[in-house]
Amino acid sequence: MDHSDSLFPIALRKRPRRRAWLLAALASPLLIGVFPILDIAQASRQRPAPARIAAPDAAPRSQPGAIDRPATITLGALIEIQRRAREQRRAMAASEQLAADLPPGESWQAQLGAFSSADAAERQRARLIEAGVPVVIRQEGALHRLRSLPAVRAETEGLCARAQAGGVDCFVRRTADEI
Image (cartoon, rainbow, N blue to C red; front, side, top):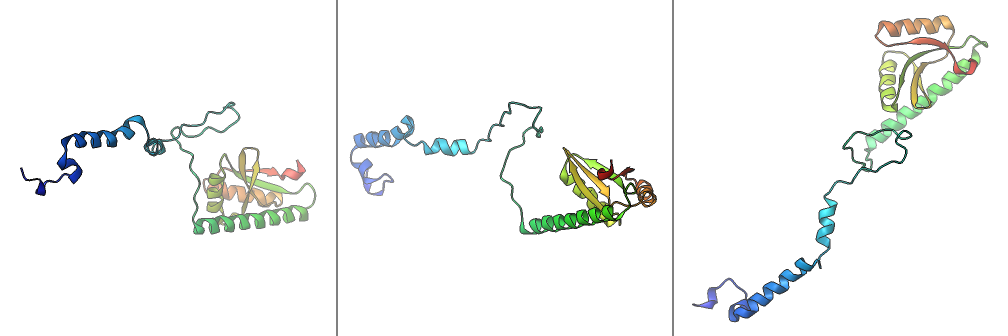
């Protein structure tokens, strides 16, 4: 047999005993775990186990199978969030000014919704603003309440009637300062 066109390296072609030794030398680190990097790579592919909370009643419940990941946001979304926050601050300032301008006991608001998440409240607020109903979001405890700007009772009841005609639940109440 001519060894000149063999595919084996020279070390393996000359002595058959070296072939077994070379294979054993290459396989032994894998068998004894000298390459722990392989275990790290395998572990990084596994999903993290959900964290257990000592007091489940105190913390909000998450979706089963949800994985905590770092939040990412685009520049456009960040600009939109800042624009909405600016609008909200302006509406709050206008609301406080209107309430201060009304005579004592004559400041009424329409509550147009109460939501458990800020996102749901913001979506409804955007719909109402597009419909021409200026509202502000007030967070009280776990609820995000959508309220109209303070006005006299007749104006607030008219606004609430229009909202109910449009399919939005609504009720009239005194402003929080006067309760």
